[in-house]
Amino acid sequence: MLSLGIESTAHTFGIGIVDDKGNVLANERYVYQPPLGYGIIPIDAANKLRENAESVLEKALDKAKIRINEIDVISFSRGPGLPPCLRVGKDFVNKILERLEKDVKIYGVNHCVAHVEIGILKTDLKDPVTLYVSGGNTQILAFVEKRYRCFGETLDIAIGNMLDSFAREANLQHPGGPKIEELAKKGSYIELPYVVKGMDFSFTGILTAAIRKLKEGIRLEDLCYSIQETCFAMLTEATERAVAHTGKEEVLLTGGVAANKRLQEMLRIMCEERGASFAVVPGEYAGDNGAMIAWLGILMSKSGYKTLKLEEIDILPKWRTEDFEVMWK
Ligand code: AMP
Ligand code: MG
Image (cartoon, rainbow, N blue to C red; front, side, top):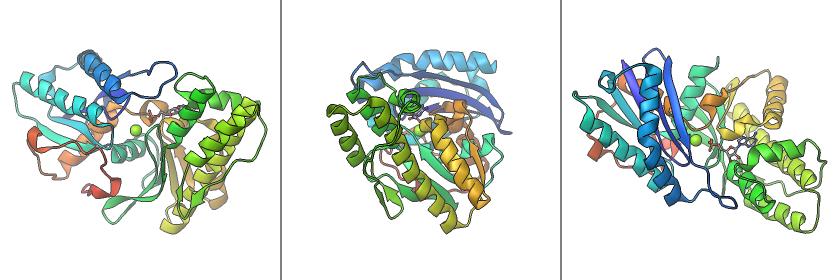
């Protein structure tokens, strides 16, 4: 069985082709880059994704060395995400269906669950607490009673958004995360607000404080260092409490911000101290990608989800992770 997955929740139009053993035959993508000084402009992003969709498909089919009619399952990101971008993915499924000479199963996939499941596929972990940190999402997820439940999350913006927004104020180009990581190596600590509320966290106050200090002339390197130390310690603290609460013995780090070595280090130390296993999802599968959507299509088709017509699968821009019932575990 071959599954084709389409990712288009924000900046990435990805197409993955995966077989039912979890072999990834192709994982191609186009990534929208906002103009200097801006974050993602949703309508621009959607237009760019649409323009590039066809060529991503061609590349994926070439890479997998298959024809489109060999596909048995098509899945797409149903949400959460930016509505205009989600529409691109769904519309592109329709385009493919018009071309197919056979029936296929169609699934609308929860983007966050897909991030976790590709992480489990691509690491040695089986049942982790997952810290999912990206440009649009920041959640601590763990599987409990049929669902991936959210044990902690941002109360305002995502950590990646926070890093990118600060970087813009400092005239650094998007994406800001990697540039902040570089600059932080030459910085030292200054105090910023530390905002953990229960199991949740907030980043907008830290962002405001850091921007104010930047305007007051505090060294950029020191601010980058302190933003990382503060925000990553908050995430590590809440993740540790989720591990303690659920009794799980594994921690998975995923999402675009997972590339950050300092965040990895903090989580690794926390896991070592607790005797838990720790893994980072390999880069190709940590950021948004089509392979994770295709893999969820395989899991869904193997476990008896109802197949629907494309018209019956609405996009769900605000879809919460725990609102998706997991039937394969
Ligand atoms: P995603 O939305 O999952 O594709 O991830 C994109 C986000 O990851 C952006 O906010 C980037 O700034 C952030 N990012 C990428 N690399 C790093 C890094 N090395 N350190 C921190 N953030 C990063
Ligand atoms: Mg994502």
